[in-house]
Amino acid sequence: MKPLAVNSHSLEHIISECQKNKRKAQNELFTKYKDTLYFLSLKYCRNEADAEDNLQESFMTIFEKIKTYKGKGSFEGWMKRITIYKAIDRYKKQKEFPTEEFPSLEDTSIEKELTKIPLGTLLGFVQELPDQYRLVFNLFQLDGYSHREVSQMLSISESTSKSNYHRAKLILKQKITDYHLEVQKNKPSYGS
Amino acid sequence: MDRKEDIGKLFEEKLQQGNASPQTTSWDTLKDSLDEKDRKKKKRLFFLWLTGASTALLLLYLLAASVSKKNSPNSLQEDITVWELDSLSNKTDSTPTYRETEEVFKIVTKDRLKSSEKGGSPSATESAVSETSDNKKKSSEESLKDATNTTLKEEVSEKKTSGTQKSDHTLWTEKSDQVKTKYYYYNDSTKQNMVIEDPKVIDSILKNTQKTKDSINE
Image 1 (cartoon, each protein chain N blue to C red):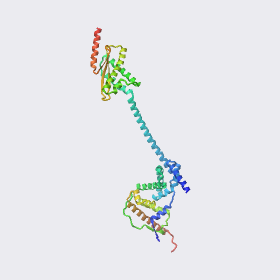
Image 2 (spheres, rainbow over the protein chains, first blue to last red):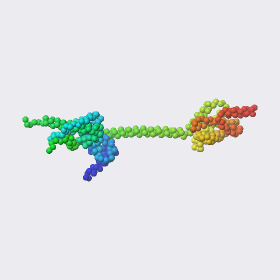
Image 3 (cartoon, chains in turn blue, purple):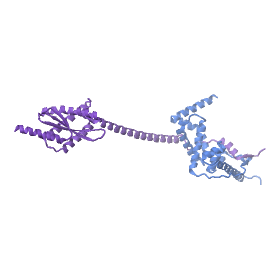
């Protein structure tokens, strides 16, 4: 347990120094969290370029707002919220979200043997989702926000959030099916 | 055994394990952006400070100027000088005695201004300007009369002129801001002071005195 205490103390020290706008501490914080926040950005953004931009903007905001961080709650959680909100702002500005009030009742489960897909491919499927579907899917499924919270964050109705989530899963299911069909097609046949 | 899995759960499990490093976003680019932001912030603060400081200085200057103008004896002198010039230009009476008395009055005024500059007790003019009630007016008139008489006496003894001397003065009352003209006379022969508002009265006295003198000389 001792190393944890040391780490916690060092993080407090880094935060305190960052609050004084010290570049060295900011560098340490960036090095410590850049990978986590970049992967989070990758899930919320359309592609790597957008994710890089989102990461940079998030860190700028983190260093600017770090004086307001009072030490309540997880610091990493606080940084993640900033990163998520940056991504939401990015796609909210760019495109009007489509509204859909009727959730589909189609099955969104998949055969277990079809779940063996590389991580990069799965991430690509998420990135290819329409902006609002991707945001709803990430917020609800991957980051554990409720539909009410999602609706407030995206300024949509709760039913739209549920519908978008369901639609996102259907699209992902279709992509996985297509992926396996493609793999089967490219597989060399040794039988006949 | 369930052979199916929810697609949401599949992505949740897989993507939670993920990690990736940014390719183009480095500390150097971030540092440059931070430095640029700090520079802009400092520049904005400097301009804000400059605007604030210059506004404060301007206000201070205006305040100081208005206070010094209020307290300065020059403002009083300026008013009196205007009046004196005005009196000289308006009154075209060519009687030598009359002009002499105007000069005497100027000397009286300057003497009172000097005493006010030295910080002594308030002069008759200042009292006359500041006091508004009837009683105070009376006392100020008396003190002004005394001061005028003293100087008139000195002036008259120096010039060794005979007959009646005459001077005029304007009182500004704070209440009405109206100009009220009073004429102060010193009769050398009777050794008496007089305060008259109508200059025609003294003109007739002067003429009578001159006539008497002329008849005696003849």
